[in-house]
Image (cartoon, rainbow, N blue to C red; front, side):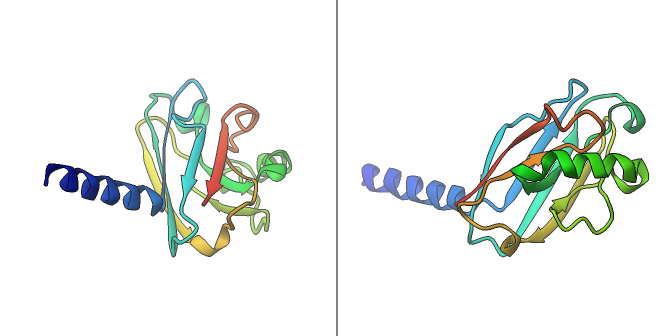
Length: 146
């Protein structure tokens, strides 16, 4: 009976992990995310990005956002975002390469955004990154869809 109960709990935990529809990240004043790899489920109808800036510096000095895109597009999106400026969250308006992005936030703030799960396809090379000027080169990670 005990073994059956443990197997049932393991099955529930596996199912919950397989249905991960939330990209939950923390950022800090050292230009780092707390994760460098995230996996989301291909079956998600809606995906959500949650960002918490656990640092103390203001948005003008150490602002962070999360941008989701094809890995090959990180640098050009960031260069175009720099031209767009802080008021645009360092993301160019109507940039078709950007799948989703959060608002730009400073220390102590949080932000959340949702987007359709159908925007991501399993087997495609995606990344998440911060498009604040100069951050994209080191503040990034791999996003896998399974």
